[in-house]
Image 1: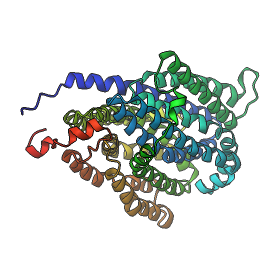
Image 2: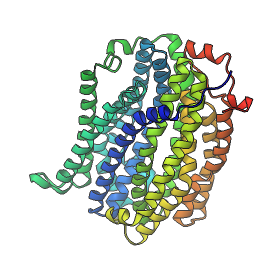
Image 3: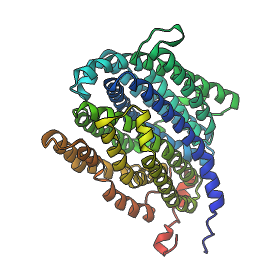
Image 4: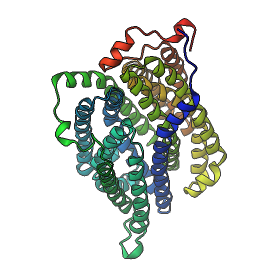
Length: 468
């Protein structure tokens, strides 16, 4: 049977409908973080470094709950393709319960044990003191942040991508305004410094959550607010859910633990390097913000077709999405490198901090295209039902190769910060080659719906017949 010509126009339009709102949402969030960093940088580099390390703690929380987001979106998108509303409701309730459990644990750690958290991330007492003040307040934003993320995952998987965008508009606007008021004591408010930034974060997360709920209700979303349907779980669903989620969860937890080890090493670099790292993480978030739109599009557009039984369409979309994403990320990285001087100056970098921050941008600019290609492929595999292959590769290479290199260069040999930082990406090219081979073989397509399983029975990857 002759394969139909791939419709690039329709494909790009579908990508844009999903990717652009998600990219804008993440761009808004990152812009808010950049403005936060600019405001806090006026207080001093120690404050910038402290808040940056607190952000690494919230990134660890992200790693712990993101496994449930990835597993949940696998089910949401495939059930959406099969138009199985009951499956969407039940899998969302299970996902939400798991994610909020993680949020509660991190909330309690940030509220009651902030000293222990900060001692873990840095040995600088001045940074520890400021971080403790920030963390005790910011911890209240964690449950709200995770709840918003769960809702956004469901809305995106069911192609309501603009609702989370509006939530981010409101949150960023409120956050920037309240930072100006509470950090510096404007409009008669007390000057709270980093504690003001933390309080602004909590309030802005409240606003984001309320906006998403209200807009979903107004939109008449059939699943998000169907609370009575969310917790009617069956034994089969729970087994299937955790069987699919477990590899993703282990991936995110072990990767999060590995990143914590890396941050422990980087947190023991000179204070100038810690401040530069905080600024770099904000700019990295800008890159990932653009990229997240494409990886969400990959998950939804591939997972939906797998669930509906359109296996060949899913396969042909997958590898095109990987290269489309890489091309886009390359252009963004080039732009960031060209504009690094005014950006770093605006964010308070000078002297050694400026040099180190630029070095980090240059290193990341070289490896980002490969790294984001790996990320897109892994998310695509997960959405299609294969949560194992990319997980095993990432865990094995991180713990067997990357972490030993970072630890030796940073803690044993005491090499310059930029060499330690470069080791954080040493495994990416090898994994990329292995992921590409797996992508074109097509063995990552593993449907969870009856429609998809039936269609898969007679399908073979076109590359095996010499066609793509």
